[in-house]
Image 1 (cartoon, one colour):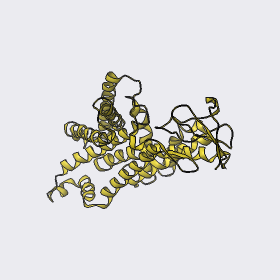
Image 2: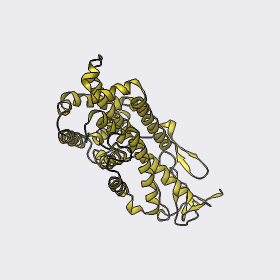
Image 3: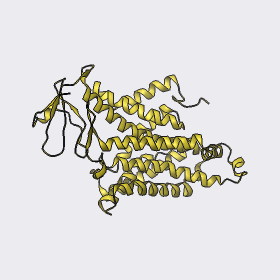
Image 4: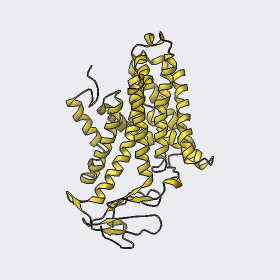
Amino acid sequence: MQCQEAGRVPASFVSVVPPVAMFSVLAPCLSGAACSLVHAGPPVFLYCDAMEIFGVPLPAMMSQLLLGLVNGSFYAMLSLGLAVIFGLLNVINFSHGALYMVGAFLAFIGVTTLGLNYWLMLLIAPLIVAVFGILVEKSMLRWLYKLDHLYGLLLTFGITLLLEGVFRSFFGVSGQSIEVPELLQGATNLGFMVMPNYRAWVVVASLSVCLATWFVIEKTKLGSYLRAGTENPKLVEAFGINVPLMVTLTYGFGVALAGFAGVLAAPIINVTPLMGSHLIIVVFAVVVIGGMGSIMGSILTGLGLGIIEGFTRVFYPEGSEVVVFVVMVIVLLIRPAGLFGKEK
């Protein structure tokens, strides 16, 4: 690929994704055979002869694929937490988005106010969210397990409003952000595109956590105890297993996944009290498409829908906000239990 420096180019000539650390992804130009590289400081653009796919330059296509993978990683991790809580505890946790927001704000407070580094907050914030979730489960949620799902939904919706109100009173509605950790700043030139290192880290970290969670629940003795404890708790207790404690820790782990996702998101999106509300509806759609309670279904569906959403932005940008719900309607018409759900 041959490139030449073109200097400054009017902003109207390019569609630029907000930069991450030193580099942003390659952005398409109005000219179908050119791409541009944007970095911090005075913008310098590199025009490249690029292969086209359906009239779209390859760098533009790959940049949207990367953005789709990043979004899909968040969808997968958040929907995984919902699937764990619903599949094992039979609770619809509407506060999951708010706890994602709490994780992001804890990272912001830890890094900017307390002087802690990003890597430490990646461990501390999910633990704090988990402790909060355990307190909620032991004090309120466990009394609703035998009642209709609506009661749990209303309780967690109330918790969402409470958390959003508290953080709005302290931080307002304007967005906050933290710097990308020094180790992950910059980008890697793959030849056909420039990939920001932090976005690659988000994808790798999310997939690692999701697959590790699936393995523990589906392939280990602990996972078999969890599944058996939800189906026949009295029988499992007869073997000396503390089922109530196991349920409490499961809920804590499920909400910790939301906190972990919030920390991952803090350096690349605006941290606001409503960031969870903007995402939770899409995440619920992901869970429904994958199948309520299906662990692997949530992971695969989250990643797949993120990529579909990214490609939709390339070919039909107006539809990118609704494509997930269109897919949900189609899936429910064909398979009401979801792609990976079990028919009852």
